[in-house]
Image (cartoon, rainbow, N blue to C red; front, side):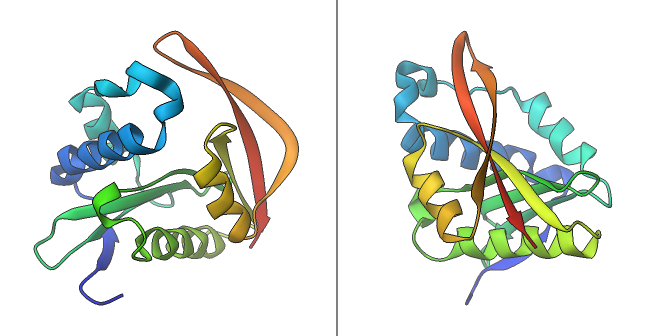
Length: 161
């Protein structure tokens, strides 16, 4: 993808990763109503996320020529989970998400994972469509997460790598 580079996240990326998340959530998680108006996590949470992604786990950022973070993905190699994939809405539709998804799959394959899995809010129709198009299928299990007192059902999707 011209002008876009993927690299491992560094500690200095934490504020930009947070900004991408907040912008993506405001646009993509409207089903949460007013909960998306304010950041869901504090800066220490994002700094800890970056610090925790030591090999074999991977946190990749997609950056432009000016090193601006446009999106990111994170995987846990020990169990095959892709637990984050977000692209700033201003850069949606340019293939950044597909590029990040392919890189996440490559990282999991390199770690010896035979399949990838992820959880997605059942209300997040756009994400469900993207993951279905990429070959993910529901395995029939789910979990409930909570955001500021609002409970959400998340579907578990799996894909053979």
